[in-house]
Amino acid sequence: MKKRMFSLLAALALALLLTACGPEAPAPVDTTPPPETSPASEPARALTQEEVAAVNEAFASWTEENGVTIATPVSGFFTSYYDDVTRLDFAAFLQYFPDDGTLSAGDEAEAAALAALPGYPWGISPGSVPIHRITRASVDAALERYAGITSANLADTSGVPYLEDYDAWYTFTSDFGPGMFVCAGGQVDEAAGTALLWSEPWANGHRAELTLQKDGEAWHIRAHRNTADQALLERLANLTAEDIGYVSWYGSNEPPTAEELAELLRQAAEHPVDHDSLTLNGSATDVVWTLDCYLAPKDQETYSGDDALYLQAGLEENVVEVFGGANLPGGRLHLESEALYQLLRTSLDTPDDIDQEAYAACKALTDAYYDARLAQVSADGGFVGWELTGFREADEEAALDARAYAISAAFYTDPPEGTLRLLAGGMYVDSSLRAHGLDWQRVYLVTIGGESAGVLRQDWEGTEADSDPLGGFSSTEALRAALWTPGMEL
Image 1 (cartoon, rainbow, N blue to C red):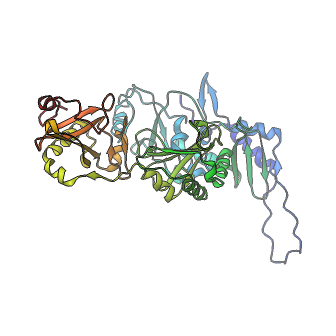
Image 2: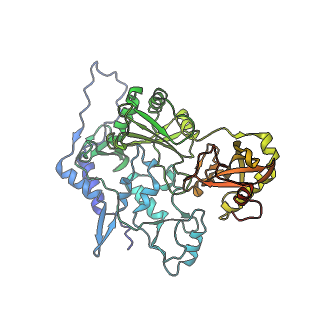
Image 3: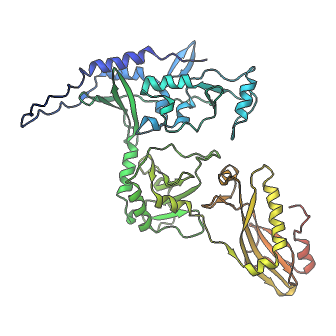
């Protein structure tokens, strides 16, 4: 059921806070020289318990209507943390926002237009899942009421499906979890026209803080912070190589030393930025490259995730997301650092390893194999091409007059960022967004008698290492029978 009216309690509570804060700041003084000693500014005033209770009524996360529990518009301001309200996480803001109705029978045209959007994630039938319609008018009303802004002032609204013809965003939420801020105390700076509200401390000793700014006759939300973020930032700013017990990442090249990583993190901690959390939903905001380091004693046999510091990066250049395990402050930071970002983005890069002379002699068969693989992996319209990354002799069996060359290729999409929605299993992408690891087996180009004979594929499990792919064959006939050749199914 639609709930669009704002609670009168919200207006009453903010008016109460405004009244309690006293008169406006003094008017500017004239040009008369001030006295030698200016009177000290009045200290911030603590909220009374009556004001705390009124604030909690104003910021209640849900209400009931006809026995149905409904999220309030203000609850969306508490679903993410930000230093600037224009940088709130818009997708999180709308996740439990009271809707303007769900798509149903009779909304086929609207549902069809929604399903035609790139990356549309839900069933196309209006009744297949409860798809919530949220109009710009409703969003702007909430933003204006509680923050003094509109959706046009937000830094980014691209994370939610939107139809211009209906001027509405659409969400699908099957559970109920609106954001919450329960005020336990606060203080008002009358001269500055600001109020700082805070929650009870959590188990980790940190709390949520809400900053309000007086704007004319209203109070508006300006920031919603988790003090654990600041604690984590301070931890990074003072990090040393001695604090890092082990560095782990998923690239084939060497990870940075503890000294290098500590220095990069200290420098990055000087540049925190407001930013939405990275995702894992096959979109342009996905986590793509990661690095883990453990702030625990060195040379342990095992390291606990409770001591881990996790670094993540996606397509947005120079932004690295950082958060920690249970033994670290529970914040989540976004740091702006070209050096740290490039460390993660290039972590999976390896130079091509191609014996050009050997490849030239076997080019027709090699290309035929990867063309066949491309046809196989692009069945969903994803990958559009491939590039050879490896062609190097791996084994020779004199008794069979045979040689095996380990071969590999990377696949790409157009545009390149399309690879992200295709990643699965052991696949990964390099800094150029080429996908690697599509072959789930070892792949070899085999020659017999100096001529290209076919492609041998062997499971990673249960076989010898790359040094002996031909060792299990007792005759040339047995080897030929195991090879793929053009025209065969893969």
